Image (cartoon, rainbow, N blue to C red; front, side, top):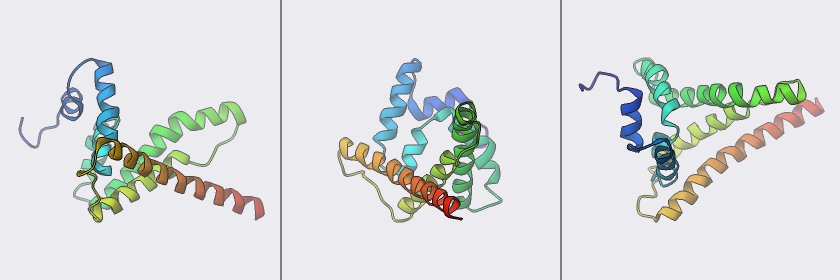
Length: 163
């Protein structure tokens, strides 16, 4: 396969997670993601199906148009909106409360992208540490981003309430 040709989804998943049945691949996704040495590596293993489509149909077409940091931030933000807010969260809110909600997934993924780029810029890696420390570090990375998102959400709710 030459360098410019697009890999099939099956080949892409096999490269990222290895072969096997659905459950073996799913287990590999969780294990490899949470044992990743960097935040960037975490995302290379996480959700390879959606990652494939985001990479080849969104991220790569922007390659010659915008810098990498902008591509990463935009790709993560679009992913947060379409995969988390639009598909899962907003329909649930409409069914229960008949109203829209704060775009939690969109803002969370925005913070995930920014934090990943910062960690990458400073060269943060857990390569020398045990797998347990890597898992805790990746959970911390996800938690910090979610915490920032909840702070923004709470701040906006306060502004709306008092204005």
